[in-house]
Image 1: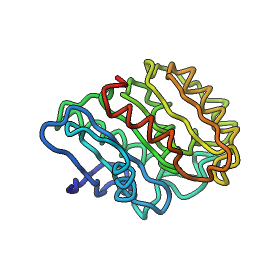
Image 2: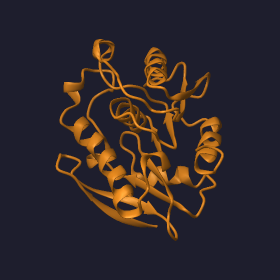
Image 3: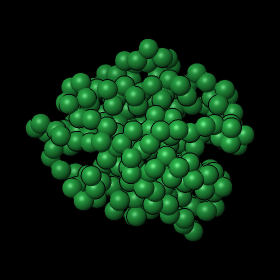
Length: 222
């Protein structure tokens, strides 16, 4: 495992270290976004639970000050700027890096986020719809106030991208009604959503998510 220096034009996430793992000549990628006050190294621990083939490039950035944006994900978007737009640019830049350096296109990329990172991934794919190999949303949902999401005209297509959307119905950080709205929006964008509602999970990762991601990085999906 080594690190890659990521540079973008949008601070504060304009100069980040990315944990990178690959062997040989990768033909697919996994991009992992951590939760608040965690790190890319923490998300690499999740990879340790997966059967990742040798042809896989794994990228796990660490946010500036270990958080992608400062406030809760259900407040107005302006209250999380400029950090939010900067964080979204990180995902976009990593996707471009995969294409430029390894000729890996979006439909060969699995995006995964937990908690704050899950919200970030959800926001990115809903506003930049394109085919991905798979998307794992682990305890998260769309970013913004209720009225902003209701007023947004989400257009484009995820082209049957398999999406795992899993959350505890009583998650202390993720209101479940936001998960339900997220499901509706992603479905309207033509994603193939597997929405999983749990009890007594807390704010953590369910084994269902691990099973989904294992399928995603194997040839069972895509």
